[in-house]
Image (tube, rainbow, N blue to C red; front, side):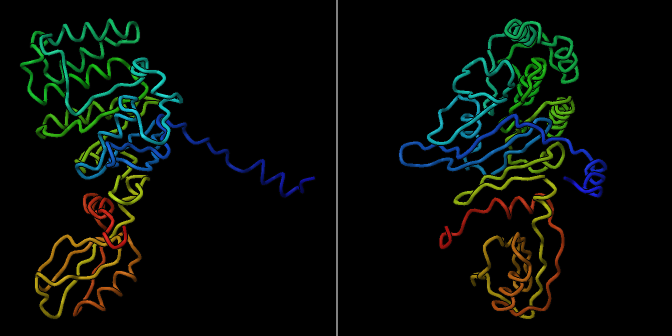
Length: 322
């Protein structure tokens, strides 16, 4: 039997909302080509209502990961669920609820913008929002009579986004969507994504190496790293896990001299009498290593920017520790 205090505490305790279900859930995901593993042992979650950035340096396997998530490429290991279902079993039916814009930005080249929109509308039927497409088409300055083969890179990206959003998917997956776009086009594109994500229950997975975009619209991030487990969390938490160190020296350190640093530390700038370092490790470990290796005049610790944090957190494992 509970005491009066326990009953009172239970009745007055705030009711916490259950965590949002995951639009994407992957566990132990991997893919190899021949004997070479491109992706290995990747765990990934994209909660409903989130805008999650899939981050990593070029060649780390982001596009391969997205293809596995969408059932376009069978994984060599691991499991995937999209909106609670196996994408491999769903096949093309998956794209009734998932919008996808690939980095290749393929279109039916001989179709006009209006004609392509009509084809997509026929595929999706009543769920296709013609008014929404027309609103985005006008805002993105896409002529309905323009043929797809004449569209610029930016126009192609905006058309694909407009078509994907008009289909009213529950999940929007974008593979390097702003790569190669000028500033104005990127702003339009990101605004469209933000509007989509603001609708209740929608989820976005955005693969990119454009860190400026991440800071503007993403609330969560997953960083893929060569030879090391991926990191995931809230964007601000990832940024706050890294600090910048301005290191002043009393003497001159020649450019060719190797400076031993603990795992998790990366040199951003190096002058004969000063260093700029970012590190995700314990401050005392880094400072002790610097004190042993260099003639220190002083160390100033500062918060790292999101770009600096990405540089630090995405660094590959060192060979001696891999």
